[in-house]
Image 1 (cartoon, rainbow, N blue to C red):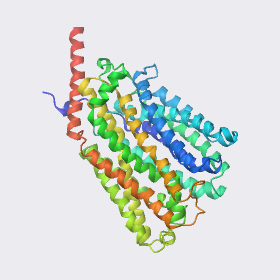
Image 2: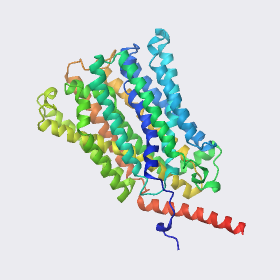
Image 3: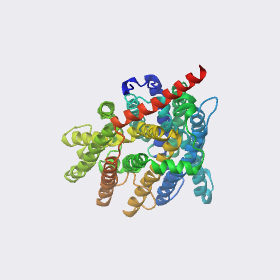
Image 4: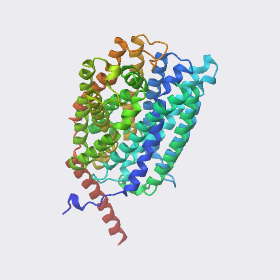
Length: 491
């Protein structure tokens, strides 16, 4: 009699999970860099604010459009170096070349700059998608143990905290102090740093996945049902409601976090509303440890109760934190002096607590969704015998990028609506009522609505911990039957 406990899970060593997670970090350092592109494009390359926002939105939209093709490439790739490692390396090289092109746009003749930066952004999204899609797809081969898959979140949470917190400190407290503003030398130093760091992280990720990047771990191994045509792929996607629900829920959550991390929104919140842009780095550093504790708590919750419940709990707390910010700021007499790390009072403590809720809990679903995509892929394998992890990961990315591409467009139109048509708000702009309102809407209002949509959708998602135990048992039985059949034939 077979039980869930008898399943021989494909488990990974802890260091393998930690190393492979660096693949996502390698792409996130580029995500962090591109977050400042608005200031380069408008301030140095001389492009209009609304145009810049539209271009960045187009780039993310294009990223989504090519993702299904990237998924097809992943599913069809088989080489002596495996399925995933070649794409990780190629993607990182292409992405590095693309950012060099992006940040030399100002050297082009003025009439050609728009066309040149569009071309550079297209190249960037091809390389970025190649590498980042592997992060989602390769979760299926790294481990299928329900107790191990959530461990990805600990590593990714720690790495992202270092990247986005350390990166913000690096930019706000070092580069801005060194160069005075978002100048060309600032971007030159930032680009070189990011390229080197991402290459190192990619190398470590390749080492982490090397022993798992083999055919025996792809679905049912040799017995995996081939999916060869677009019609077959469409049939699989159309028939997997859990993929559709997860994609919609995670995409709206991603839009919320994208808006909160937009460099323009950060400048408006800290540089103008709070009157001290350096606070963005200082406060991020101050809440780094509590934020990591949140990551450990959500990971523990996911291992104990399942990924779905941890996702919902995090999203609820994140939404509460965002909504609470609005009355917090409306009740302050002077926002530009209320929050200070030099004289820490009630307002500063409350701001940091809400920051932990909104960012640490609100951002947790974005990390949890990566192992959840592996769950959906395994669910499909248990139903049809197909291994389409690449396509599932990139279909998810397609909708994810389509929705998150709205972030820079939303920011561009909102700031243009309050008078910033030719340049984005900077740390040198004075706080006005329109700026105050726009900041609350962009930093808290719209993200809270996005999280609400994410929560409602996730309530219809059915792949909880009990269901996934049944999925893994079914896959294990299929593999065991194949092994027994082969042994019988051999005898």
